[in-house]
Image 1 (cartoon, rainbow, N blue to C red):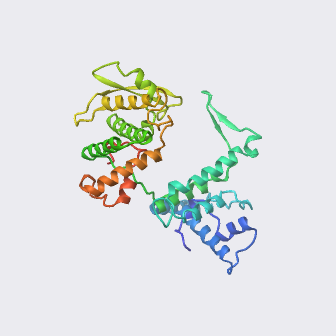
Image 2 (image 1 turned 180 degrees about the horizontal axis):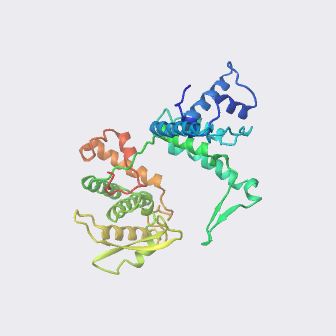
Image 3 (image 1 turned 90 degrees about the vertical axis):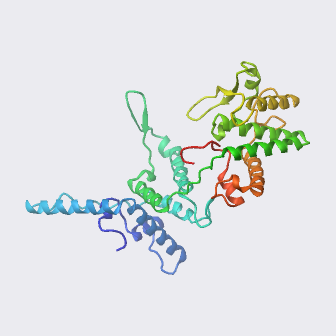
Length: 364
C-alpha cells in the first residue's frame, strides 16, 4: 500500500505489526505514544530497505518474474516461486539495531541541528558487531573459511550481517545522503599572511610556553605545506632526527618524520629532502634551525618537535585553536584573501583544520 509493486521480490519483507510483535511480544496500542513511535520507525526502516533499489530495477525485476510465471503456465506448471516457510519468531535481521540507528539520526549532529549524518550513525552497527564478535557465542566455537595462502574469513552469529540489514543501510544512505565538508586549501597569499601573523605572535610572546606554541605552529604549517603532508603526519616531525641530519647538506634540508604514515604497520623514520627556501620566500631551513635552538634552550634534544615547552606533542585541537585564532584575525582585517564562499567567522572555523593537507588538491 505504501511501497512499490515488486519491492518484496528484492528485499526480505515482514509487515510492521509482525516486527513489532517480535520486538515487544504484544500488539501495538493505538493510544501509547511509545508504541506509535516504534511503529512509525519500523515503517521508516522497511521503506528504507525497499528504496535501496532503484525504481527501474524494481520494475525490471517484477517484469521478469511475471514473464517467468506466464511461461510456466504455457507448459502446465505453476512457476518456480514456491511459498516459503514462516520466518523465525525472534529478531533475526538486526531490526532493533536498525531502529536505534534511525532514532539516533534524529538527534542534532555536528553539521546540522535537525539530524546526525549517515557517516556518524553507521558506527552503531559496528559497535553492536564488535560486541557480538567478542561474545561467548562467537568465541566458544571457531568457524572459519581458509584458503591455501593461510588467510581466514571468520563466521559470526550477527543479525546485522543479514541481507535485510545490508539493504536497510544502503537505502538509509541513499535517502539521507552524506554531508562532506573537505578542508579548503590555503592559497599562497593566505599562507604567506598566516606565516607572517604567526611570526608576529612569536616575536611578541614573553613566556616560554607561548614561544614554544607559536614556534611549533609556525614549523607545523610550513613543513606540512611545503612537503604536502597530511594533517596527522605533521605531528611526526622528530627533533632528534632533525638535529642528527641538520648539516648533511647545504643544498637542501632533511625533514625527519618518526612514526607510522598511512598504510604502514610499524613506526619508521622517514627522511624527506626539502628545498632550503621556496620560490615564494618561505625559508624552511631557517625555520627548522630556529625550532631546534628554541628546543635546546629548554633542554629538549629528543622527542616530538611539534611540542609544548615540556616536550609533550601538541594535540590537533591545540593546533586548530592557534590556526583558527590567526585566520579569524586575518579574515576580519582582509577577507579578500579567502574564497568568496567563506563569508563568516564560523565558515573559517569549519573550512580550515589541521587534520588535512593545506595544499591544493584535485577536489579544491
